[in-house]
Amino acid sequence: MIDKEIEEAINKQINEEMYSAYLYLSMSGYFENIGLKGFANWMYVQYQEEMDHAMKFYRYLIERGGRVKLYAIKEPPHEWNSPLHAFEETLKHEKHITQCINNLVDLAEKKKDRATFNLLQWYVDEQVEEEANDEEIIQMLKMIGDHGHGLLMLDRELARRTYTP
Ligand code: OFO
Image (cartoon, rainbow, N blue to C red; front, side):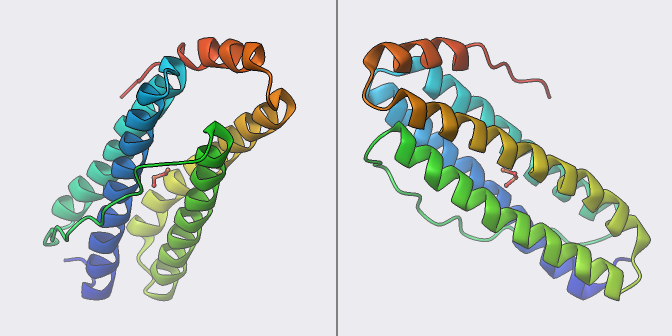
């Protein structure tokens, strides 16, 4: 049986991951609306990955004999000033998620829950990758500035991102 405090912390993290999914789906809709289909695709893939992050915790909790509790998902923003603004907000959000994962690692260590600690290593690595991806796109967007041509080229590149479950 999983420790109750860890169970509660994982349930909260399921909610965080589902909010991440909601946020990126909202961004995908925003990008569709401003005609950047490649950016919309990138965010849609991200939405799918976030649902996987949530479901990985969900399945783990059940496997450990825990009780899943789904909480209300808060409303994400619907509007951003620019693609750069959306990606800066994405990076800010991912830094918050990294902090949540680190707190979970600390709790697993404190409770000497080796299985949860091991599971969390996957998320630790995933956060490194996610922050790096966002940083890279932010750098490109800064270089592009107001040049429409560069933006369309990046849009074409982001259109190539595919979802692999
Ligand atoms: Fe974006 O990594 Fe999960 O939340």
